[in-house]
Length: 142
Image (cartoon, rainbow, N blue to C red; front, side, top):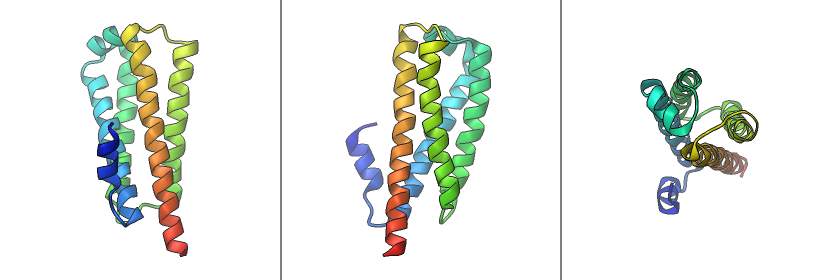
C-alpha cells in the first residue's frame, strides 16, 4: 500500500467518506485474502509453511469478516460502535499473527515475511479507520 494510494483514498473533506473508503479497502483486501486461502490452501500453505486445514479455516473466517466489513462500508453512516469493533478486531488479529509466528508456527522464509507483513497491513487498516472515525466524531461535535 503506497502513501499515494492512501492519500488518494483519504482525499476528501468529508471524514465519513474517508471512513467508508478505508472500511471498503479493508473488506476487499481481507475478503480477497480469505478467498485465496480457501481456494488455494494447499499451495499457499506450502509456500508460507502453514497447514492447509488451518489456512482453510482462516480463509473462511476472513471471507465472512471481509463481507461483514463490506456491508458496514456500504452503510451511509457506519455505526461508531461497530467501527470500533472492526478496529479492535483488526488490532487483535495483527497481534495474534505476530504471536503465532513467534510462538506456534514454523513458517518458511516466505511465511516469515508474509505473516508480519499482513499483520502490519491489518494494523494499518485499524489505524486509518480509527483516525477517520475520530475525525468524523470531531466534525459532528464542531
